[in-house]
Length: 245
Image (cartoon, rainbow, N blue to C red):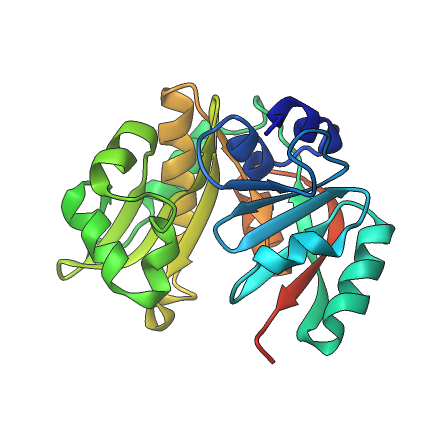
């Protein structure tokens, strides 16, 4: 397959997960023609990005729950026509990528405000395995086949309560020079500021290593947290949640 020719279809799409796939880090690239593609899909975890000329042949490789992200209106039309009510339309929010925007003193204040009943630690194999075991935390490491691969490519932060993982921030994807941040908190520990602490700590650790902590917001709550940590919203974009029925 000509990755270069397919990559052209995604030109101008400032999305970390697209970069991750095109740079060969993770995910799948599927095209409608292996020699001269005019239509392409990038799949990273649960998210699929569509570019080029709309072609429903790409939908045939989609299995299970997915979020479908069209590059333009023509892709919206074909997704709605092909899937009907199975594709539920909503808005996600792109966050600007601004390398020098973070106030590290403010981020450290958030980290230091963590209640003493909690312990914050960088991901090690034990925390990685904790995250794998529970549904709420699985996406903190779901894109990494094992801890050895994670250790080479990623950096993560976990908050423990009584020795158990209750919140974390970790890459959903990695790309050259950066990561896409995933933050999750156990349901009964939400609304306690733990996501703020995890996000702040991961950003600080990334900046130490010269890694850009990219952020993409699933909803307005995620936008609000991103802005609290120093990011700025770029624009909303159409996404479809694809369900079995």
